[in-house]
Image (cartoon, rainbow, N blue to C red):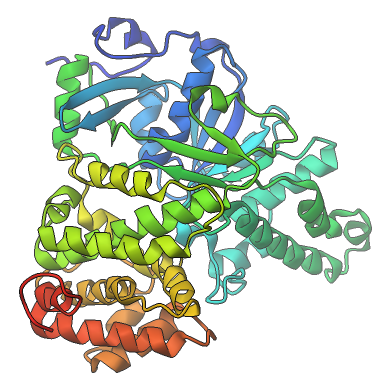
Length: 508
């Protein structure tokens, strides 16, 4: 086995069975900066951009930015940004080398370099996959202005730590230099993600404006920079988007297998499924690649597609993850192969589908059939523990929103609230039937501090901590339903909880 690395110099030596960039990477210019250059971005947006580059759109290369860890940069920089996308199904695997990432930056190491890339007039789009928790929202959904990183970025705007700080400072610099604003394209699983990020950034900029206005620096206050919030509110485009592709974590076995296929080593290949979907609101004043030529759906309103994905795919994914963990299933396909869990997912979809827009032409029957096929893909080995992370951040839009809509229509959300109870039970199982750090959550420390309490007290406390259904008239109904499910899970496990819904052989 050779220890040569995948790189520009080894591209031509790859086996003919491996798809690889045939365009001149040296002639590609950066046009997109991506914040959060993790595995999902490399399996999704970067692959679509690679298609555009192959079609001759050479001014849309990607500058990847890691906001925290240098791991991706350290893996890919010696490979000239190249990596392998392994598209796996139950019948085989296809390998594709992606070349759209031109360079990689690590924000904590060199924030000035990140700001320079964002301010570069060639940068016309900034995309983000930074995960829900990195948007630093308070319980009510607004900006958490007390978060230490937000406090830091307001005090030191030229040395930012957060996406909010980087975007706002870059837009300020572009404005001062007379450079057109870039379009900000959120690709995370947030409700109305473009509008949500827009609101958060305006809130952040308003705090920054206020700080400038009261700084005593009359020159700064008069310069117009103290009105940055209005500029972002009125002059910067934030289209919403919906993304969908399952991307399991890469294992050492994956690396070894792919090295054999490539005849060179790839430090960080990405595993994924054949299915890929991207729905984008078409609002790009500074221009965009012709994504629609390669399967991207450009629309006027992404909302209905986003709701369908969040409530049917992401919601059922969370259900499979937590019930699977409690049942001893470590991958999605194994959990979904359990007839009881499969029946539960069908019931979950039956509750969630009526909460979707009924006049948007959504094919929910076809979509859920497609989901069932994807969940049955035995080649992905998508770990339930990976999906289980950050439940307090994910469940409000995946589960709680649907449950509130159900109650608003006078219908019970019994299946939906079992997912919340299963999350709580799985958290409680860590260090007992599950490994201590099997999955994590931003409120873990406060969850641990709760100790052992009766189910109703536990659920009430967790709703308070996570901000679930805050100030909503149906909040107590959700708490009661969740507490009843949690009590059954504690006493009889998943079999007893599912039996209460008429699933399986046990009686409630």
